[in-house]
Length: 431
Ligand SMILES: Cc1cc2nc3c(=O)[nH]c(=O)nc-3n(C[C@H](O)[C@H](O)[C@H](O)COP(=O)(O)O)c2cc1C
Ligand code: SF4
Image (cartoon, rainbow, N blue to C red; front, side, top):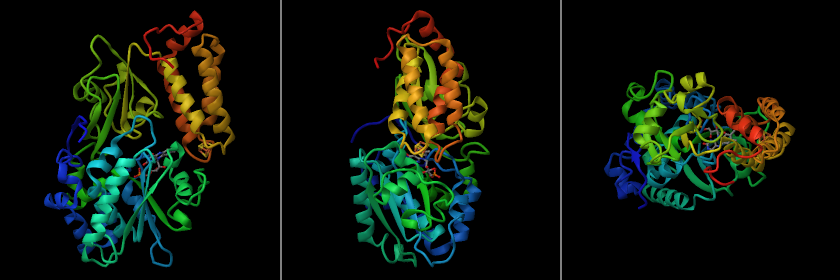
């Protein structure tokens, strides 16, 4: 098995054991006991209350309160209800869901069963990015084991709940991670986000009431049912309870996955767990939550990794994908890479997004070539400002924020290109 450095907590405790991804291995460690309790001893309302009290927030990027989301599903059985497990993991810098799928597939299925009881859903669609062929195979094997053992099917774990899980593979588009783009793609259409309202709880997959949750969000549920809300709140901060799996990448000694409580300081993650910068280098800036989250300079890494603290520094937790950049890196080139990605991935429905992402990339490249002017910096901020909060989905905001962050903290890199008429960072990565 491939070795990935990681610090373990309750989610990843057994991820080093080769048999944990099998049904027998999972059950040997108490697996499916929480689902049995939820399915046979608890009402849907009790599960929703428990998860609400635990304060679990979705780990797919937006941080919505999970118990509250589950409570939005309509009651009654006049229409079939669905769950969607979002395994698109399309945010650059995020790779935690891959590990959870490869090493803990039964933990996800157990979380899905608990959510199914809470919402009354009869089926779950797992939407997984096409590039994750191996994780998809691992999950499909685990689902087959569950069907054969009666954990999934007409009477899940011997209870009244009927539930099945179906894996659908995507084709690798960032926008299919956005929940309504995902739903369109799941239905076999172009992955273009839907206007909201109606929200998925009213009109979701195939027009039916649907709840979409991230892979990691489901993975927390068995631990909450097993150990209780107070236990869960023993990790993390008051407003952001629990742990999460931080994915650290970039120019550090030990890139990898680190399960740590929310609220762990960013400098602890970068310098202690990930071993700090490469020999002879200094950290210049860190993107804290996947590529769409605004960068922080090295002087601001003393921040607890929880949304309420990151927001004070004009950034967010996102998916916890920590990307470390050192003093060789040209921040204008970083801007070129980021804006190229968003230009390429925009679905094109909204003018502000389709045109804005193109212009951000065009101007960024002009500055990188040494052909920019100081007025270009104002234009970048003007375009980014006009993309925020104007569009069908949050993609346009996600494209604007990193540009604003780079200019907020690394304006001198941009000005140096303009003054020197070329890139002043000869050691930086090539475009
Ligand atoms: C452009 C864009 C891309 C997204 N990509 C993902 C993704 O890859 N995986 C994911 O779980 N959520 C992604 N989301 C968030 C989802 O829309 C949705 O909020 C999430 O799946 C809900 O799950 P949660 O409540 O458990 O976090 C994305 C959102 C946007 C705007
Ligand atoms: S914001 Fe961008 S990605 Fe989202 S719907 Fe509009 S054009 Fe498509």
